[in-house]
Amino acid sequence: MKVRSLFVTALLSLAFAGCGPQGEPESQPDEVGSDAEMLVAAPSRLFARPDKGFTELTWPAVSGAVSYRIYSGSISGVYSWSWTSTTNASSDPYAPGAPRFYVVKAIDAAGNFSAASPEATATAFANLALGKPANQSSFWDPNRPAGAAVDGNVDGHWANGSVSSTNWECNGCLQSWRVDLGESSSVYSVDVWSSTEPNCVNHLHNVFTSNESTTDPASWTKRNDQPLASSQPTSLDLAGITGRHLRVEQNTPNLAVVLAEVQVWGTTKDTQAPSTPTGFTGAEADGPRIDLSWNNSNDNVGVKGYEIDRCIGVSCTNWADVDFTSNLNTTDYWVTAGTTYRYRLRAKDFANKGSSWSIITVTVL
Ligand SMILES: [Ca+2]
Ligand SMILES: [Ca+2]
Figure 1 (cartoon, rainbow, N blue to C red):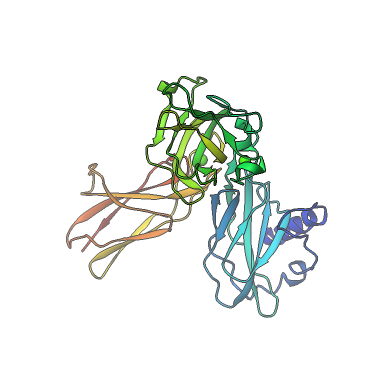
Figure 2: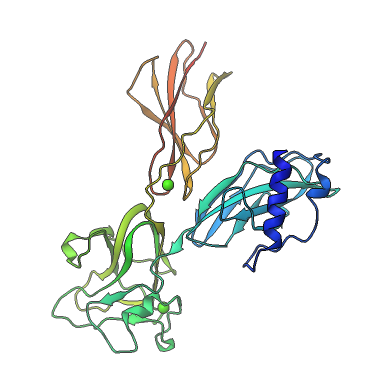
């Protein structure tokens, strides 16, 4: 029985697992002893969403469940760790930067376990800048090196030794700081921690990235032209750009770049598009309206959401936006009786790569 062999695999893996930050070795013979007691339904879906150093897991609540057991591992179908959640959401801070695979089971009041949910996978974003080679346009003193902004310490107090600083004066130039991530990477967001010294807060900085092996400022792409926020850190959403180098630059001549820490959240370059969503259906309902639903796609890093377009006519191609959602359904209320609509659906990952389209046609009677 497929479910049973999954349980046995999980238990064998758990028995030989080492230590970890959240998962705990399974010690109760719960699943094996309850294989005839599938009284509670399995979670119908599992969503794994990558974030900064962890993965967020959510699933539809199961009627009759009092808690849930989440299983994770680095190989599809083999789960090395498990832990319990009393709600239908949990997060996994384990192994950022590498794919993790998950299933979840519901547990009822009598301690019976359900079968496993469908498997989900995600790669949590890692801080790609941590400990990487950094440089700056000038140096204030040996105790404020460029590397202090990638040492893993966000302490912004000048005296505590974890802040980088350029000089101030430079004949009217714009001082800058930069880091080399070592390889072309998929970058999703950047957190810039300013120094917290009163004369350093709210300095204006710009952030540039480059995928080229060059330090020529003119060839880099500016990613923001706004002052960094006064709150810590300033977070920039880079929507899965490809980049290797990142530069933080003053926009005022003769002011220093003073940085407590720069965190570049991403993964190795993501070249794999999500799988095409299956089970795309559209049902006409009173209103009139069309209810659209589909099954989830998978991706090596994570599915950010689903793009839905429509056009009018059986063979139309002039697509217009309907929705972009991380849910597995949406409703089109802007429909007219006697009209045929064509819908297309695709998954997009965090690097903005799209799956192939699924296309259906729905007629409103
Ligand atoms: Ca630091
Ligand atoms: Ca991908």
